[in-house]
Length: 142
Image 1 (tube, rainbow, N blue to C red):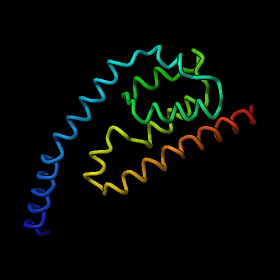
Image 2: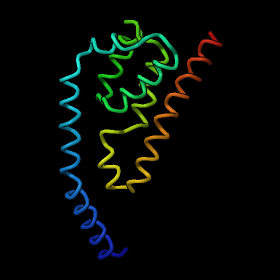
Image 3: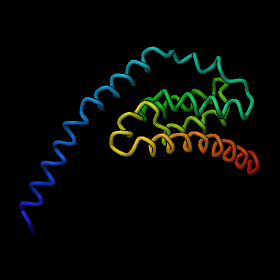
């Protein structure tokens, strides 16, 4: 076992972590600010019941609004019970796990900017497609 390589790798990793820490703190502060500024009743007002519009709006909103997982699991049932369509909730879920607009600066720094942008754009449109297909299959089985 090469001790020098382990020390070098550890030092590089710690330096990278220290360099990215301000970006991570900024992301956490931005997410916290959005969570406090957007009321929960906002979602009831924007969904029309149109499968394409709801999936687009759902994917778009969740791309820019992020909440912690516990909040999401609690709100999922509430969204479905309060006039939010299944396709919107499904688009929320898929976009929440794949599209990271708020984290784009950090992702661009760690990966390449072009890759991060293309990945987020393709993940956004795939969230819409997956939401529509999932709801179609769910309704077909049901």
